[in-house]
Amino acid sequence: MEQPDAGKFNIPQLKSMVQELKMLANKAGMIANRDVINLLVRKVKNSRSLVDVGGLPKSWSNFTQVHFEKMVRNLDTKMEGSINHKTLATCFLLLSSNVPTSKDLEVIKANLKESSVSENVFLGKEGGE
Image 1 (cartoon, rainbow, N blue to C red):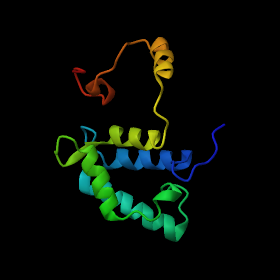
Image 2 (cartoon, rainbow, N blue to C red; image 1 turned 60 degrees about the vertical axis):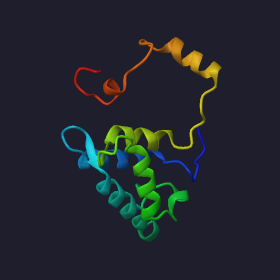
Image 3 (cartoon, rainbow, N blue to C red; image 1 turned 120 degrees about the vertical axis):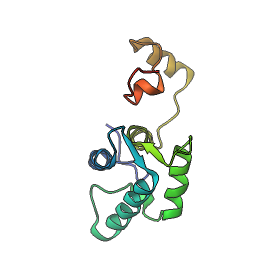
Image 4 (cartoon, rainbow, N blue to C red; image 1 turned 90 degrees about the vertical axis):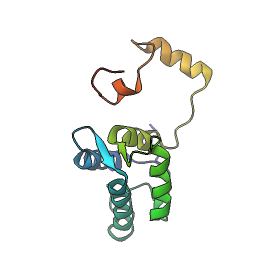
């Protein structure tokens, strides 16, 4: 079993975050950048004052709005003013994960039913292309 890490989300934090992201997302699964930033800033404040179990990783306790703006800007690669909630949730899930080696990738590929998955299929967009 994996040991707790101050730089990663724990399971209750991930569950809470995914639920909140889904609530903020529109029908297309997109969340306005400003809404994401406001959510993260609010969660930092709650984590400090309420010791919020569903908050953010401990190492994020000193993050400011500027940190979150930079993070969201990096995820909004098409500069649309919004990001997909699944993309953001995946980033949170994989936060501080090790990058797989070539050998790790070969094992993963051997266990996949499909050789690849397009971004649109991953995001659940119609047509998959």
